[in-house]
Length: 216
Length: 242
Image 1 (cartoon, rainbow over the protein chains, first blue to last red):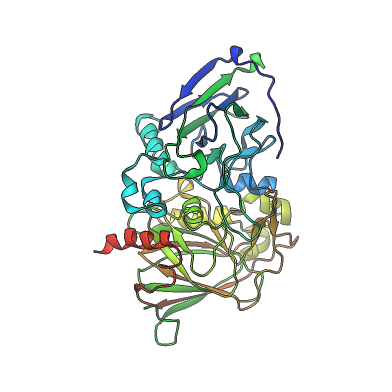
Image 2: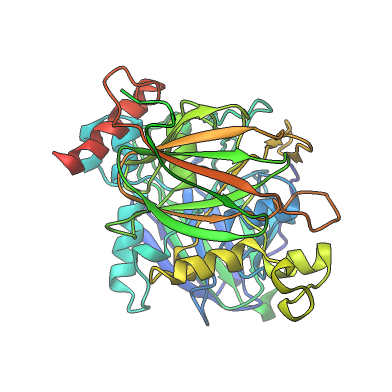
């Protein structure tokens, strides 16, 4: 777990958006640009997928990413690997310390399994992903949804092979920052989960910032 | 009631040679025993609902619904639709990996060197990703359908700092795992080495496949009652057949 702070000045960002909980966001981050996700109020899960903008069949691979670095948690220095063995993004700064990529996104159907059958009518990350893809005219759909990153989420795995959902280690003002190594579509669901204590049952907004290469 | 494998209910058996790939449909109420014939096998596997192939094995949903980072008897394989594709009804190995992904052409060439068909005939070096693409192509599927897979017979754990540890000599000769299928499932297999296998030799091992008619799970079923989540997972699955 490594804490690395950024030297970038938010005043010089070329893009700055506050994304409320329960909203999705699909945006192209160009090669060389730096993208920051800022946890405004603390312990918010930001479910995120990455695609090559040139060929979205090449996309983020959670299993290749953790296997190539030999560690199941993402932090500063992590290379977010594609299904074709290329680097999509490199995490260049991280004040949270570690992020999950085994827990996936919440969905109506998985909520019905995990919590109760009638929870399937609640809003979920996969609904947000499908909403964004349904409007994007990018040719992507459910078939393109795969195992995602959960920025700011703490999902420890024990040496005995149990998956646990622990209290968050993020807090208001913590951020993670990554440099695009190719032109990348970033697809986010700012998680609306109300059944999991990891966000204190209180989904909150996050801030998304992008710096152009010249500003760095 | 789930009938164990016997001479009377056996449907078919075949041996998948080391390095080979294959795909087939297993019907609801049938089961598949996978046996590591020589020891040290790895079987990369993907699973799809045969009737709606957009519904497929989902590693994160399987793990988080059952609070596990590995598979063994009692656990089930969830699809992305909150349904059970298959249940692990028997296991003599104890741990099967689903967090490490599959080998690819670059990894196999870097580790074992190049062995083309022209040079090596059917002993050519194969990798799991290309093997999966070939099998998926037979069913109209492709790259977009490759998701994190199961690696039967392999163990990868994580230490307290998250470091991934591959267990050598994990699976012994004769070790087996049994899957009962809860819907009609397209099974896609590649008997290639695990991507973290430190063996410097290209030495994929064969796997014996035995299919039998086992019946559908009753109310007392081990996997159904293994966790409260699974009761709901089976409810969701059985709605397909009411």
